[in-house]
Length: 287
Image 1 (spheres, rainbow, N blue to C red):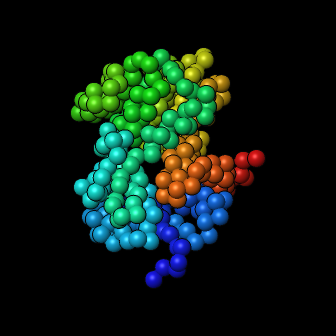
Image 2 (cartoon, helix red, strand yellow):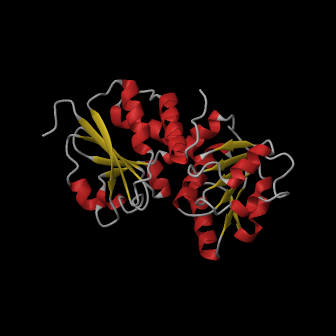
Image 3 (tube, helix red, strand yellow):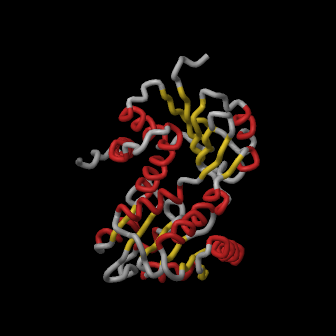
């Protein structure tokens, strides 16, 4: 039996050992004085999410979800917010006081907040590298910051059709182009790279970047910086990284799970930076 006042939260996914979410959430609990709160990680795949949620008792405050659970969890929930429904992806489950399981998506908020933090409030057009669930969340975020067309660079017509469909659903003017032309994306005022580590390395070659690059949002956080992000920064462009996204989406999760706002953004970011530095063997950044 849990101790009085004890609340539980966790991140689920497969694989999950790499997740930084425990570092971020525990840093928030420490800063907020929530000594009785715990946050763990659990290896859970598509076949196990239903059983996990059936045991989602009153001691639970909420869950963070990563791949491959963001879509398969939806049938197991009592409610899905309009934000999560718009992209058919849930990365947050909140247990309400009456025991209902409510799914939300804080990735979209995290992307917008991370861009705003770097002064990117509105751009005339944008480019997205890649397709899939993260790209759909990127389109939802761009619906709030991009005034014009978004060009999605994808592999294959099936992915292109999917991205055009997401654009129609989200009210975003989406044009698709083949991945072979991805270097053209770098000329956009805002480039969102939603691809896994290594996928954009070929774009970091000498001469590929424009003379005055705009903003690159690369969702990878480890290893960091990616070759493209490093080249972008050397060329004088603005870089928003995967840790920025991870921290800002976790801030909203902490606020939803604990009912305490604002969440301690600086403490969470510093904890994440220190953890990544420890993994890489590099000294943590100053400040």
